[in-house]
Length: 159
Image (cartoon, rainbow, N blue to C red; front, side, top):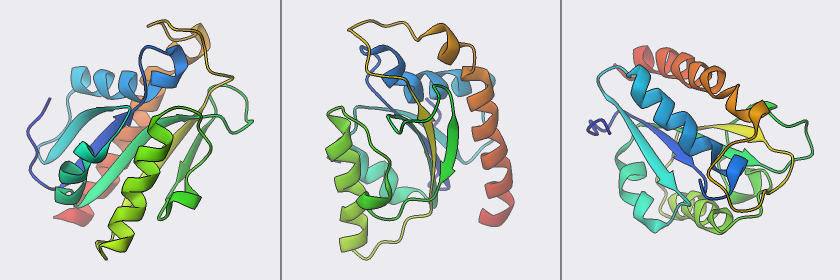
């Protein structure tokens, strides 16, 4: 992982043991291979928890990448700016509560977050397995490019 400079955090969320539900982690792993500019931390947030509180608090901007069960066709990506837990799309895994709780924690602490969420629709939760479905796996580079474009537009504003 790249070292945190406090500027921008790209956080991939998901359980890689559950196929497509782990797409956020797969995207940040792909970003690490591509490389990111200085001042950008890429972090595998796994299933999320309050352990993410510190890196999120140190970041000036956060780009979240996560799978959602929102009824859209599998692979659909939506760019959202959630501020509260109620702004976060529906997921069914354990990190659902943890990440939503983190967003609410920042609100309660009066610590405004500049958050962009790339919500990637998945068809359903899959049985245990490390592999992404072919349709999602084929689009990981595209999702990484969306994150890189967001990084590129954020860096000039953060200077």
